[in-house]
Image (cartoon, rainbow over all chains, first blue to last red; front, side, top):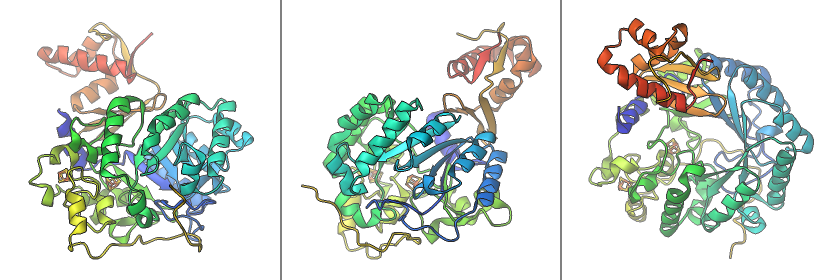
Length: 373
Length: 89
Ligand code: SF4
Ligand code: SF4
């Protein structure tokens, strides 16, 4: 079976997701200006320990091999280690994303004793100024301290996770060097206009020239760098990047949010992409296999305005979330379409109403973009 | 080829297999590799290969036509390389 046949099969959906993200809390001690989930304050309806364990048991029964845990800051939960241990005992691998604040020397040692565990430390700049402009003052030092603790505890190869913005594309080599110096693995992902990222998208998303820079860099380094397969819209530049080349929303990807709602992907926290709740009758499996939304996302899609473009096979029209939160039609070009089709649509008068995320747990302070020269 | 008709094989103990409409997914908890198994008959052979003394016996028991044995050997060899399958000690 050829690769494209596999893509077709995956588009039809799987019995259980491959890439399930679970945001355990909307609470966060930081207030990053591009936060995909608009996190800050805890939601009072947050799933409690017993509910979380019950969902993990469901995922074990569905043979979900591993999950991505995020937030908010997941380590803020008092039962965080209890949840990790429950996953471990049930053979569910966990990769969790953290800003590093709660990775103390003690916690690092404890994490180093666990199996099936990957840790991603989030960073947005390879230097203090670039990083802290996005993540807040002191956050660079916090991440570095966490990485030092993990190294000293012999945790093994953790990951450094970077969202590519206009201000850090030029630092790709520096990030790689930083990761190498820890024996860590670099992971870069695409900025999407989701959550607070929608408000800061115009200032932060990479320019057309930088898109090319990212693509060329990935072609040169792709095998040693993780991307979450998030840059497939760049395949329209030429040779395809490694990884799955499709929008996996509701097909291989989904999100469970802190209150148990299930969305098609972590970047579309909006009622239009909410499939149900793990608390509904039938639990997660029912939502994944039977919800109207997920079944419709698995239908063959139309290429819309991309139909006449020769790149559609390689770029698939890009990311649904990026289109949705910039107000573009879902069956047309991505806002960062490499031939500029998305940009010219955005400039035309057809884009009038831009949807807002359904959830906002930002703390009630004003958010400003930081001081970049 | 790392796997031959005479090899006695087994699923790697750190690997789990999940059936899917297109065949199955195999996941290795150690190296975190996810492998797409796109042929249902390869999946069946893989899941059963530990019960036989050799790959040839497994193929025979699964009524795999002899003209396809070479293709199976190369498929199983590549699964051995990704540590989904291993030769029994
Ligand atoms: S909507 Fe975008 S981020 Fe979500 S699965 Fe599709 S391509 Fe990926
Ligand atoms: S027009 Fe559509 S298919 Fe063509 S490059 Fe742009 S997003 Fe991709």
